[in-house]
Amino acid sequence: MDLKITGQRFIVCGASSGFGESITRQLVREGANVVAVARRGDLLKDKFSSFKKSVECIEGSLIYRETLDKVESIAKKNEIHGIVFNAGGPPTGTPLQTNMDDWDAAWQLVMRWKINMALRLTPYFVENGYGRLLFIESQSVKQPLPALTLSNAFRAGVTGFAKTLAHEVASKGVTVNVLAPGSHETPAIERVIKNNSSMKDISFDEAKAEMEKNIPVGRMGKAEEFASLATWLLSPHSGYVTGQTISHDGGSVSGLFG
Picture 1 (tube, rainbow, N blue to C red):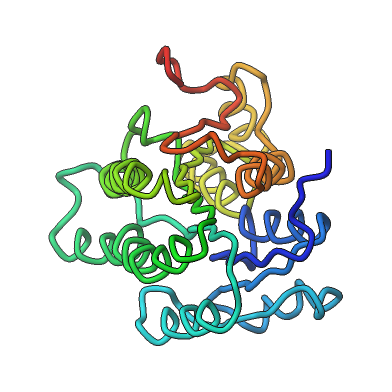
Picture 2 (cartoon, rainbow, N blue to C red):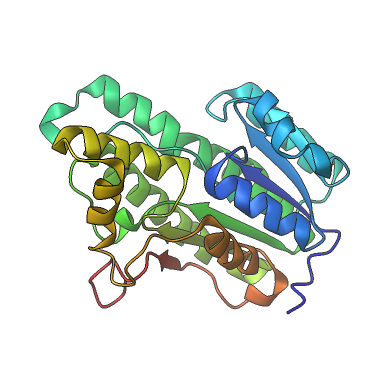
C-alpha cells in the first residue's frame, strides 16, 4: 500500500530508541522526512547517521521550554503533517508509595509537555487544513496496571485531552488519536523484565516467559509491528479515524473495547 506520505514532514518525540526510533525508521522508508527529538543528541545522530537527508535531529528534553521552542520554530518555517507524542514513563509505585514530588514530576514527564506542544502546534495544522496528532500511551489507559499509579493516572489524562481535542478539530482536516501499546520488545520492557527477574530471583528468560504466558498471542509485540500501525494513522488514509484509543497489545486488555 502506498501511504501517500512521500515528502511529508513529521515530528517524532523520543526518537532515539523504542517506539520512537521504529516509527522514525518506518516513516523514512515510506519517503517522509522526520524531525527527530530526544534528550541524547549523540545517540540520536548515531542512530540516523545514514538518513541525514531525511532526518533532522533536535537534542533536548521536551519538558523544557527551550526544546519546545526549537520544535515550534521548525513548524513555523516548514509545513508539518503530523506529530508523534512519545516519551518514557514515570517510576513504578502503588498509590501509598508515592508522594507529591513524584506527582509533580510525573505531570511534567507524562502530560504537561504534550498538552503544551499540542496547544502550540495544532493551530498550524488547522490553518493548513491538515494534520495528524498521535499520542503513544499505554494499555493502562484501558486497564490500569498494578503498581503503575503515576502512569495510570496521567496517561489516562492525556487520553481524555486527546479525545476532547479530536472533537474540536475534526472538521478542520486534523485527526487526533492514541495508541495504547502492551508489552513489546523494547528497552523499556527489558528494564521491567530485569526488575521482575531480580525481585523473583529467576533468570531473565524465565521472567520474560512468565510475562508472555499472560499475553493471548503468546509473545511480546515487535516495535516494527507497532510502527506500521502508527505510520498508517499518520497517513492520509486514516482521515476518518479520529478520537480513538487503539490497543496494540496481543489481546491483553480483557474488556469488550480493548
